[in-house]
Image 1 (cartoon, rainbow, N blue to C red):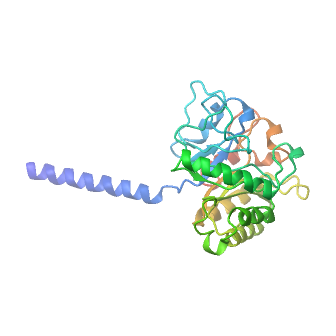
Image 2: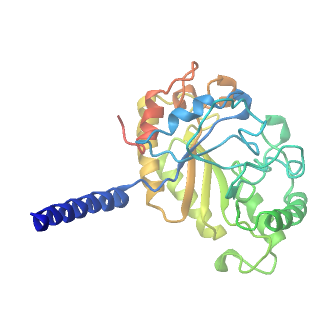
Image 3: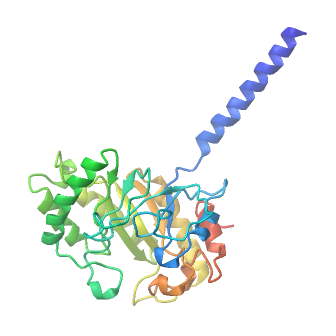
Length: 297
């Protein structure tokens, strides 16, 4: 009787371990994230992206924290990694604190675009490189375990190449910028397109030419000025194909679809068909698809 009980118990443990091992083997890699703008005010809508079945694992808000004074966060629990951003060169030593326990930091936002577009900081590579060298040393002294991503390009690969050559002139992309003390851990970029092949080729070329693992912190099925109104089915298929490809690339560390906004002004002219949230703050069908690893639901 005792022997049989032990045998049954061992079989149960073995079966449980097998199920757990299978679950671990099939668990999503956690690359997918969202950007939810600090301008939305309350952080509460973010929590619905992070259910037990969701493949979305991280988020950012273009600021340094979310529940330490930057957003309304009373009684809000978000079970996900938050990644702060050093939006401009003035952010490092301003009054806002970095999110407690952060492990990754995103760099300056779109310095390759003119400031008049409203979301960019407009820095020449020379000015940005001078500030970067000063600030990245401080960051790594204060937070030695944090991974630092580069300034994020809107579209200009020449800008980031010039920047990298200025901060690491003795090295190159061939050796991943060697032991340069100023090099970022990750290359950060945005990419808007309606062409999946263009999307894949552009990111692959960036990785080849810059030699660093990458984070794509904004992408959507949209091409400014040339294809202003993609249909929802086109957007859905684009999401499915791009996410499937991104998840297969070892050099892609994280990515975030652009569209987790309630106020349409925060879409900055990206078409409404890319929305992950509607104007009431509820998940759209595309939002549910994004949580499903990009697979259509």
